[in-house]
Image (cartoon, rainbow, N blue to C red; front, side, top):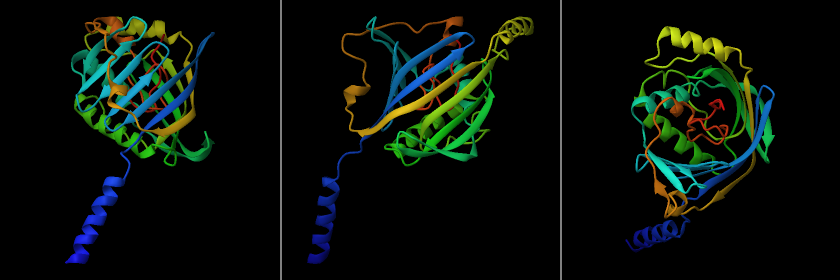
Length: 275
Protein backbone atom coordinates (compact mmCIF):
# COMPACT_ATOMS: atom_id res chain seq x y z
CA UNK A 1 0.00 0.00 0.00
CA UNK A 2 2.84 2.37 0.88
CA UNK A 3 4.48 1.68 -2.49
CA UNK A 4 1.19 2.39 -4.31
CA UNK A 5 0.66 5.63 -2.39
CA UNK A 6 4.21 6.74 -3.13
CA UNK A 7 3.73 5.89 -6.81
CA UNK A 8 0.49 7.90 -7.07
CA UNK A 9 2.09 10.83 -5.24
CA UNK A 10 5.09 10.70 -7.57
CA UNK A 11 2.86 10.66 -10.66
CA UNK A 12 0.84 13.58 -9.35
CA UNK A 13 3.98 15.59 -8.65
CA UNK A 14 5.34 14.81 -12.12
CA UNK A 15 2.12 15.91 -13.77
CA UNK A 16 1.99 19.18 -11.87
CA UNK A 17 5.59 19.84 -12.80
CA UNK A 18 4.84 19.58 -16.52
CA UNK A 19 4.80 22.96 -18.33
CA UNK A 20 1.48 24.27 -19.58
CA UNK A 21 0.78 23.60 -23.25
CA UNK A 22 2.45 26.22 -25.41
CA UNK A 23 1.05 27.80 -28.52
CA UNK A 24 2.65 28.27 -31.92
CA UNK A 25 3.62 31.53 -33.64
CA UNK A 26 4.15 31.46 -37.41
CA UNK A 27 5.74 34.24 -39.47
CA UNK A 28 5.04 34.22 -43.22
CA UNK A 29 6.09 36.13 -46.31
CA UNK A 30 3.64 36.41 -49.19
CA UNK A 31 3.77 37.48 -52.82
CA UNK A 32 0.55 38.10 -54.77
CA UNK A 33 0.38 38.73 -58.52
CA UNK A 34 -2.77 40.00 -60.24
CA UNK A 35 -1.96 40.84 -63.84
CA UNK A 36 0.54 43.70 -63.85
CA UNK A 37 -0.03 44.33 -60.15
CA UNK A 38 2.07 42.66 -57.45
CA UNK A 39 2.06 42.90 -53.68
CA UNK A 40 4.44 41.64 -51.00
CA UNK A 41 3.33 41.32 -47.40
CA UNK A 42 4.18 39.73 -44.08
CA UNK A 43 1.77 38.22 -41.58
CA UNK A 44 1.91 36.27 -38.34
CA UNK A 45 -0.48 33.61 -37.12
CA UNK A 46 -0.68 32.53 -33.50
CA UNK A 47 -2.59 29.48 -32.27
CA UNK A 48 -3.04 28.22 -28.74
CA UNK A 49 -5.79 25.89 -27.60
CA UNK A 50 -9.06 26.97 -29.18
CA UNK A 51 -7.89 30.44 -30.15
CA UNK A 52 -6.20 31.86 -33.25
CA UNK A 53 -4.89 35.33 -34.09
CA UNK A 54 -3.77 36.56 -37.50
CA UNK A 55 -1.93 39.88 -37.79
CA UNK A 56 -1.62 41.45 -41.26
CA UNK A 57 -0.61 44.91 -42.42
CA UNK A 58 -4.17 46.20 -42.12
CA UNK A 59 -6.08 44.08 -39.64
CA UNK A 60 -5.86 41.70 -36.74
CA UNK A 61 -8.36 38.83 -36.80
CA UNK A 62 -9.00 36.80 -33.66
CA UNK A 63 -11.07 33.61 -33.66
CA UNK A 64 -12.16 32.24 -30.27
CA UNK A 65 -13.91 28.87 -30.65
CA UNK A 66 -14.78 28.70 -26.93
CA UNK A 67 -16.63 32.02 -27.00
CA UNK A 68 -18.00 31.41 -30.49
CA UNK A 69 -16.82 34.78 -31.83
CA UNK A 70 -14.47 36.28 -34.39
CA UNK A 71 -13.08 39.81 -33.96
CA UNK A 72 -11.88 41.85 -36.94
CA UNK A 73 -9.70 44.63 -35.52
CA UNK A 74 -8.42 47.79 -37.21
CA UNK A 75 -5.35 48.86 -35.16
CA UNK A 76 -5.04 52.19 -37.02
CA UNK A 77 -8.63 53.32 -36.40
CA UNK A 78 -8.66 51.60 -32.98
CA UNK A 79 -11.99 49.90 -33.59
CA UNK A 80 -13.34 46.42 -34.33
CA UNK A 81 -16.43 44.49 -35.28
CA UNK A 82 -17.57 41.15 -33.96
CA UNK A 83 -18.90 38.16 -35.91
CA UNK A 84 -20.75 35.21 -34.45
CA UNK A 85 -18.86 31.97 -35.06
CA UNK A 86 -20.01 29.82 -36.73
CA UNK A 87 -21.65 32.67 -38.67
CA UNK A 88 -25.17 32.86 -40.03
CA UNK A 89 -26.88 34.29 -43.12
CA UNK A 90 -24.79 35.71 -45.97
CA UNK A 91 -21.61 35.49 -43.90
CA UNK A 92 -22.19 31.77 -43.42
CA UNK A 93 -22.68 31.31 -47.17
CA UNK A 94 -19.40 33.06 -47.99
CA UNK A 95 -17.40 31.24 -45.34
CA UNK A 96 -18.84 27.85 -46.30
CA UNK A 97 -17.91 28.44 -49.94
CA UNK A 98 -14.35 29.41 -49.01
CA UNK A 99 -13.79 26.72 -46.42
CA UNK A 100 -15.29 23.68 -48.08
CA UNK A 101 -13.45 24.19 -51.35
CA UNK A 102 -10.17 24.10 -49.45
CA UNK A 103 -10.67 20.60 -48.03
CA UNK A 104 -10.15 18.35 -51.06
CA UNK A 105 -6.40 17.77 -50.79
CA UNK A 106 -4.61 14.80 -52.34
CA UNK A 107 -1.12 13.78 -51.28
CA UNK A 108 1.56 14.46 -53.90
CA UNK A 109 4.78 12.52 -54.45
CA UNK A 110 7.07 15.41 -53.55
CA UNK A 111 8.58 16.65 -50.29
CA UNK A 112 10.50 19.81 -49.40
CA UNK A 113 12.48 21.35 -46.56
CA UNK A 114 11.29 24.79 -45.48
CA UNK A 115 12.47 26.84 -42.49
CA UNK A 116 14.51 23.80 -41.46
CA UNK A 117 11.60 21.33 -41.41
CA UNK A 118 10.58 18.61 -43.85
CA UNK A 119 7.10 18.91 -45.35
CA UNK A 120 4.96 16.90 -47.78
CA UNK A 121 3.16 18.47 -50.74
CA UNK A 122 -0.58 18.16 -51.21
CA UNK A 123 -2.50 19.25 -54.31
CA UNK A 124 -5.96 20.71 -54.14
CA UNK A 125 -8.42 22.92 -55.92
CA UNK A 126 -12.06 23.50 -56.60
CA UNK A 127 -14.64 26.19 -57.08
CA UNK A 128 -15.26 29.00 -54.64
CA UNK A 129 -17.64 31.94 -54.73
CA UNK A 130 -15.05 34.04 -56.60
CA UNK A 131 -13.92 31.49 -59.17
CA UNK A 132 -11.94 28.32 -59.83
CA UNK A 133 -8.57 27.73 -58.19
CA UNK A 134 -5.71 25.23 -57.84
CA UNK A 135 -3.32 24.99 -54.92
CA UNK A 136 -0.18 23.17 -53.81
CA UNK A 137 0.51 23.24 -50.10
CA UNK A 138 3.35 21.68 -48.10
CA UNK A 139 2.39 20.33 -44.65
CA UNK A 140 4.87 19.47 -41.90
CA UNK A 141 4.10 17.26 -38.91
CA UNK A 142 7.62 17.81 -37.54
CA UNK A 143 7.50 21.61 -37.17
CA UNK A 144 6.94 23.15 -33.71
CA UNK A 145 3.28 23.40 -32.76
CA UNK A 146 2.13 21.07 -35.55
CA UNK A 147 -0.23 19.10 -33.31
CA UNK A 148 -1.61 22.24 -31.63
CA UNK A 149 -2.23 23.85 -35.00
CA UNK A 150 -3.85 20.72 -36.47
CA UNK A 151 -6.22 20.37 -33.52
CA UNK A 152 -7.39 23.96 -33.89
CA UNK A 153 -7.97 23.49 -37.64
CA UNK A 154 -9.98 20.31 -37.03
CA UNK A 155 -12.17 21.93 -34.37
CA UNK A 156 -12.74 24.98 -36.56
CA UNK A 157 -13.71 22.79 -39.53
CA UNK A 158 -16.07 20.73 -37.34
CA UNK A 159 -17.88 23.90 -36.26
CA UNK A 160 -18.28 24.97 -39.90
CA UNK A 161 -19.81 21.68 -41.04
CA UNK A 162 -23.29 22.90 -40.24
CA UNK A 163 -23.07 25.76 -42.72
CA UNK A 164 -24.13 23.60 -45.65
CA UNK A 165 -22.56 23.72 -49.07
CA UNK A 166 -20.22 20.82 -49.78
CA UNK A 167 -18.26 20.88 -46.54
CA UNK A 168 -17.17 17.38 -45.68
CA UNK A 169 -17.78 16.01 -49.18
CA UNK A 170 -14.11 16.40 -50.11
CA UNK A 171 -11.01 15.27 -48.25
CA UNK A 172 -9.70 16.31 -44.88
CA UNK A 173 -7.14 19.01 -44.19
CA UNK A 174 -3.78 17.20 -43.79
CA UNK A 175 -2.29 17.07 -40.32
CA UNK A 176 0.56 19.45 -39.59
CA UNK A 177 1.48 23.06 -40.25
CA UNK A 178 1.45 24.31 -43.87
CA UNK A 179 4.91 25.78 -44.51
CA UNK A 180 4.33 26.82 -48.12
CA UNK A 181 1.37 27.57 -50.36
CA UNK A 182 1.18 28.29 -54.08
CA UNK A 183 -2.26 28.99 -55.50
CA UNK A 184 -3.83 30.25 -58.70
CA UNK A 185 -7.37 31.55 -59.00
CA UNK A 186 -9.18 32.23 -62.24
CA UNK A 187 -12.05 34.62 -61.65
CA UNK A 188 -15.32 34.37 -63.51
CA UNK A 189 -17.42 31.57 -62.03
CA UNK A 190 -19.19 33.51 -59.32
CA UNK A 191 -22.50 32.27 -57.99
CA UNK A 192 -24.35 34.03 -55.20
CA UNK A 193 -27.75 33.32 -53.71
CA UNK A 194 -30.33 35.92 -54.71
CA UNK A 195 -28.53 37.00 -57.88
CA UNK A 196 -30.45 36.54 -61.15
CA UNK A 197 -28.97 34.36 -63.93
CA UNK A 198 -28.60 37.47 -66.11
CA UNK A 199 -26.68 39.35 -63.42
CA UNK A 200 -24.50 36.32 -62.74
CA UNK A 201 -23.69 35.86 -66.44
CA UNK A 202 -22.81 39.54 -66.87
CA UNK A 203 -20.51 39.62 -63.85
CA UNK A 204 -18.83 36.35 -64.81
CA UNK A 205 -18.23 37.56 -68.35
CA UNK A 206 -16.55 40.69 -67.01
CA UNK A 207 -14.49 38.81 -64.43
CA UNK A 208 -13.38 36.14 -66.91
CA UNK A 209 -11.36 38.81 -68.72
CA UNK A 210 -9.26 39.40 -65.63
CA UNK A 211 -5.85 37.68 -65.41
CA UNK A 212 -5.56 34.89 -62.82
CA UNK A 213 -4.47 35.76 -59.28
CA UNK A 214 -1.41 33.85 -58.10
CA UNK A 215 -0.29 33.71 -54.49
CA UNK A 216 2.92 32.36 -53.00
CA UNK A 217 3.17 32.12 -49.21
CA UNK A 218 6.27 30.88 -47.40
CA UNK A 219 6.86 30.37 -43.68
CA UNK A 220 10.06 32.11 -42.58
CA UNK A 221 9.93 31.27 -38.88
CA UNK A 222 7.87 29.02 -36.67
CA UNK A 223 8.26 28.72 -32.90
CA UNK A 224 6.58 27.18 -29.91
CA UNK A 225 5.67 29.92 -27.44
CA UNK A 226 3.49 30.26 -24.35
CA UNK A 227 0.84 32.88 -25.08
CA UNK A 228 -1.47 34.69 -22.65
CA UNK A 229 -5.23 35.26 -22.73
CA UNK A 230 -4.52 38.93 -23.45
CA UNK A 231 -2.87 37.93 -26.73
CA UNK A 232 -6.30 36.86 -27.99
CA UNK A 233 -8.37 39.80 -26.75
CA UNK A 234 -9.42 43.10 -28.29
CA UNK A 235 -7.11 45.85 -26.96
CA UNK A 236 -8.59 48.03 -24.23
CA UNK A 237 -10.18 51.24 -25.45
CA UNK A 238 -11.00 50.02 -28.97
CA UNK A 239 -14.51 51.01 -30.13
CA UNK A 240 -16.98 48.37 -31.34
CA UNK A 241 -18.53 48.97 -34.79
CA UNK A 242 -21.57 47.49 -36.49
CA UNK A 243 -20.89 44.61 -38.85
CA UNK A 244 -20.53 45.80 -42.47
CA UNK A 245 -23.46 44.88 -44.71
CA UNK A 246 -24.13 44.64 -48.42
CA UNK A 247 -22.03 43.58 -51.41
CA UNK A 248 -18.83 44.86 -49.81
CA UNK A 249 -19.03 41.99 -47.37
CA UNK A 250 -17.84 39.69 -50.13
CA UNK A 251 -14.34 41.11 -49.99
CA UNK A 252 -13.97 40.89 -46.23
CA UNK A 253 -11.07 38.74 -45.21
CA UNK A 254 -11.48 35.77 -42.95
CA UNK A 255 -8.97 34.17 -40.63
CA UNK A 256 -6.86 31.65 -42.47
CA UNK A 257 -4.72 28.76 -41.66
CA UNK A 258 -0.97 29.23 -41.54
CA UNK A 259 -0.44 28.54 -45.21
CA UNK A 260 -3.27 30.70 -46.36
CA UNK A 261 -2.64 34.01 -48.08
CA UNK A 262 -2.99 37.34 -46.36
CA UNK A 263 -6.32 37.79 -48.03
CA UNK A 264 -7.47 35.44 -45.33
CA UNK A 265 -9.27 32.29 -46.01
CA UNK A 266 -10.60 30.29 -43.10
CA UNK A 267 -9.02 27.02 -44.04
CA UNK A 268 -5.69 25.91 -45.32
CA UNK A 269 -5.32 26.16 -49.07
CA UNK A 270 -8.00 28.72 -49.75
CA UNK A 271 -6.97 31.33 -52.33
CA UNK A 272 -7.17 35.08 -51.80
CA UNK A 273 -10.12 37.32 -52.41
CA UNK A 274 -9.79 39.82 -55.24
CA UNK A 275 -8.49 43.30 -54.40
